[in-house]
Length: 81
Image (tube, rainbow, N blue to C red; front, side, top):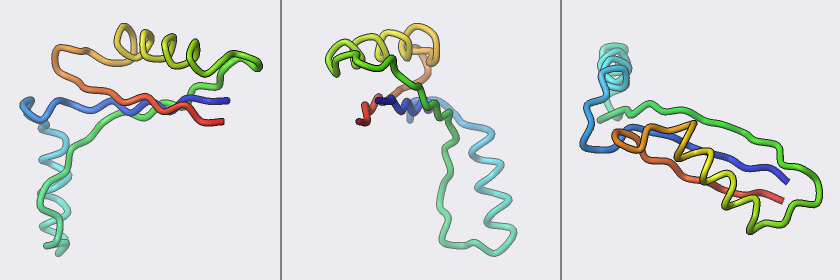
């Protein structure tokens, strides 16, 4: 089993890196791109035999306490079989 964690800046927080990418894409002719928000992606391999509920709780704790800054970032956790 593994967990996927996506971390991104909250919508209310300015994203200068995303803005730079968006501007660069537009200048290269990609007019369909309206906005870009950048973030972080983590794949976490879980210990064999751990139950889904325990895995979810531990990964959410890691995401909120270590991987993301909850003041300026949101995160999602997905547990895969």
